[in-house]
Amino acid sequence: MKITKIGEMWPESSSFSLEREDTGERYIFVHLLTPAILSDKTGIHPCSAGSCICYDAHSYQYLAASEGDLLHNWAHMTGNVKEVADRYGFQMNTIYHVDNDRFVTDLIQSAGLELLQRKSFHEDICTMKMSELFIRLVRTQKEGMPIISKELHDALLSLRTEVHMRYAESWDVESMAKLLNLSSSRFYALYKTVFGISPKQDLRNIRIEHAKNLLKRKQYSVKEIANMVGYSNEYYFIRCFKEITGKTPGKFV
Image (cartoon, rainbow, N blue to C red; front, side, top):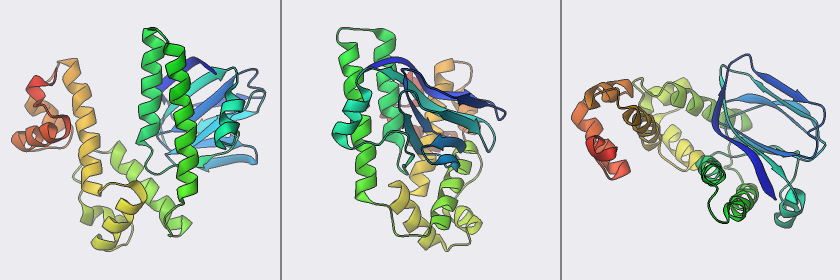
């Protein structure tokens, strides 16, 4: 198995669509970070953020933005991809729905870095990363989904996507719960069960990720970045940043 191309957190506009009648010799993996429309072996479907699919060689592929701009991870592969997938029970042309999907981005980013740097044995490491990805996606299905209705499950996914897109706004458990007509306690419990993290910590994580990217640009002061990612108190932002990264913003870059 060999990765020939890879895209990490790849953005496309709200008008984006891609259709391939035949993927050729390529195996194409797609992971949605925002809702989009995907084809699988049964047809074309609207899919939530966290959905993944790997298209078999010589398959039909359709991908389009559905609710605004599209953000996704992808990889093109050749070689014995199907053999590796079969070894772990991973199904080609099948949509996998993953709630706590951060590991997918982490593995794609890691493989992308190996492909970019091309150090010794980088192809072997890329193969291991994609093999781990197949294994962990199969595990998520075997472990089962929380026992809640599909409608509520999809509503939680939609809300999380909205929060992640509008991370600088003033979100709290009460306001999130109200949007789903749930009590704060039930919303909190469902959110943590489905996503494996509390709503507050999830929001903090996404804010700090954006803050890290802003710091790397070296264009803004710490106070400006704090405001840009949703913190009105610069010192509280610094404390949160250090708790998550182990460093203060001033020492991060």
